[in-house]
Image 1: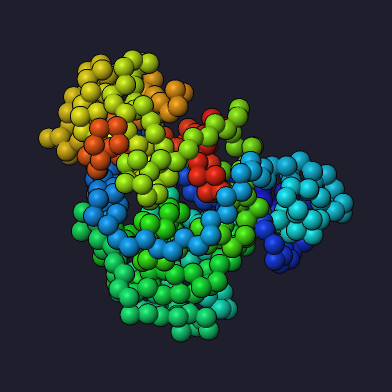
Image 2: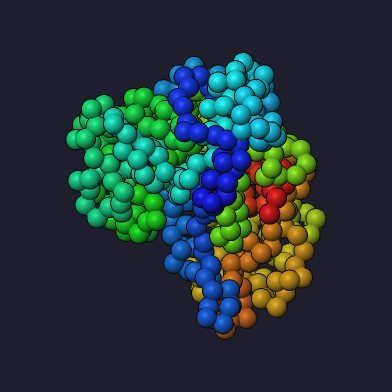
Length: 453
């Protein structure tokens, strides 16, 4: 995340005044934290596995991807804007901004000077934990997790029992519409959130969608009460929306609110600042080399696009034989990596000294000798014949417990659904940190490039 001081210095250098509204398409950067952690540091500096956090992540994945979720009636998609164009690079605006008084110009798909100036004014925002605004007049500061593995927006109301603030007060919004349609989420660890489906104006980083459906939460329990965010904004596809409402990003794209119908993700490592979501754009200052794109696949989900998933040949250790092919779901809302149980067993069988940690950690988990952490070979995710390695510092989740000689591996065995090469695997933040990721709705594809750290 860019620090507020750096944001102010950039804006000052450009001579940018207060933002102005513009009615056409735009692209906006949302700084946010790097994500959840399943490791802690002991007073002596040892990296210790956080079992509770890991098991919570595991429970969330089981619930999110359970086959029964894919039986729900799909939300309306509207008319999808298939643009066939390469994503807009917001870094080009930074390069062109040579004077605070010189009007900024860009000829990308009809953006005029006024639009581009407004875009530059709003592209760097002092937003923490993905702040959104809702209602009329706008209630600001409502914090959400951005999750590509789900498709619903849900936020707690001011009447919510046991909910983590900030909360949304429906009585103060003239545009809020309630309904009697029930909305609920329950995870395997017992955490739950429930309420009804509501509709209101929702703005994310200057992009406003009117009449956005969302889960209006009136009761929470378990991990939902812990924060640090109060709600969640799903960036998946309409078919996966439990509310039956079209996801916010899909609405923004279909309504022509974005310069490019994409969003891109950069995750900083070890709690460092700089993590960002770029809506309607990519940011070439965050990666090196070219972005390689792969088409989305529906083979694992009976022809319906629920997730941002691509065909993968699977994982290999040190360039060896693949553990098995699967459909890889790129999920920013999941911390770890989950692959079919037989594939996980085959992969860890090739890692020196690795063994099942089912008895000490939980089903599907594996450990390896901490002494070999620095010398392990690469673990690669293969897509389209190209290898995308997991950073071994992210793979190592730390000692099983303080003083243990065994460390926990970040790839977990879990049978989520499907058969053979059409089984689902969930690729979480552990992998995404190393690979700048572009989610291209306009062309139904996902792209990757080496992230700069």
